[in-house]
Image (cartoon, rainbow, N blue to C red; front, top):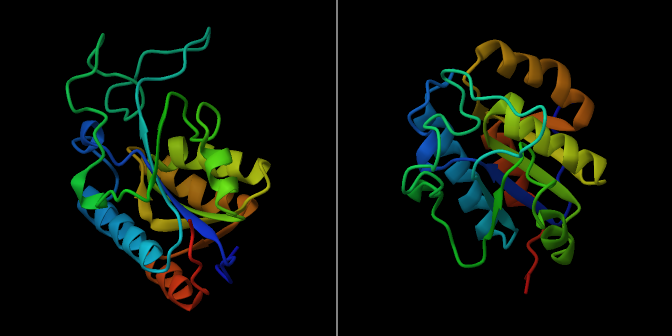
Length: 200
């Protein structure tokens, strides 16, 4: 569904743009994805809207747990402990004291964190999602947000995946069922027209 509007209190959620994933062979240049996510963050902060920065630390255990595939940005490709700094949010995101920061151990950002409560406490009714990987953490977070009753918007040029076909499938077939999709610039244009709220 094409982008139409943003609610007065819409939050940006940036998924897994962290040091340990920056070297993976993504389908789109990661520098472009990072720049667009950073531009979204700056626009949201200028309007006093919440920004949530999410990183991933390992993966959820269970009988279906599988070792990461070669080239997969999910899981720990190194075996054992993750290297120092692996989970560090990249500096380009310009983390601010007002930002919500959560660490997840599942694909989606809602299942293993208090993200939903933190957003509800700020009056958030809509989320814009960006980051990596499109068919992994981004799609899972979008599904969870939709199921929790948030209006969902996907910044489709501010996300990528290691698998081009998976990225395309999510964008073309999954995301239109979960919410609206739009470019970074179109979302920023709407943010700039959204009434600013002074959030405590």
